[in-house]
Image 1 (cartoon, rainbow, N blue to C red):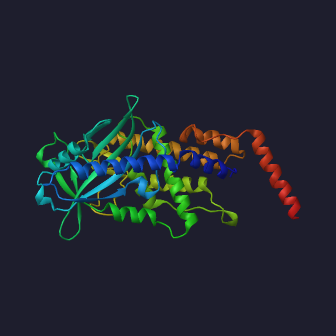
Image 2: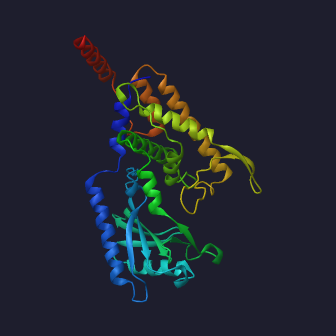
Image 3: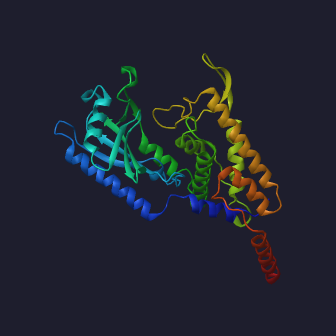
Length: 337
């Protein structure tokens, strides 16, 4: 196996959404919106609390290729579903209260999205997930759009905080947890690089797939081996595809990624047979590239294969860099002898 751990970790540094200025900007946008809601929502709307959710809170965020950074915020209104039998009615109130200068606000099925415009393009966006809380403390997510039929305007039981807890506590060992997060980010960037248009697997599906099937991989002296970990994980995922018959699509292979918290749904259920086939084929290409890279002797040759899968931020070392690394290793070995 070639020595490419440094290249993987450099890749992670390049794609990791961990820049304090970006985080500070998103926190500022979040706080501005929350303050606007508190000021503009009418007295007839129950009070709410807010919390961070999604990749921001799970520490699995990836720098977006299009530069459109985002943060997911949960708004928990102090009322049960009976206050708003039509959940879209509450989403409209949130939209109207957040709709001010330099923003566009759109009601989407799972959330209300606040877009910040700069230079005519979306620079940042904040996804507001709207929840109600019943007497037992259970949360229900408002789902539906303005033009949705009545049967698609629903309150769906949800447990985002428990999901965050599971992801953030997947491994007790800090180094194993760090590798797990790195590999989630690698696959998320792979998703950004390999898919365009609708049909890409949801990012949360990849995160939960790691929760189900990722196993850490460490070599001698307990050093992480991200190449091995990624190869094992992708092979395991491909092994989870099973045949399923659907009336409108016939018999085809699917990967089910079950949410481990309420509502316990399959996060890939809405992917069509064609989209699922595309996902499977791209995973197979990734597996083949990881496997071929594993058996390469030279780091630069391995990294050329990996760059095609993960994109331009995965750098290929110059041969001189590789030679220096080998020389340093030889010198170090000689001194220790």
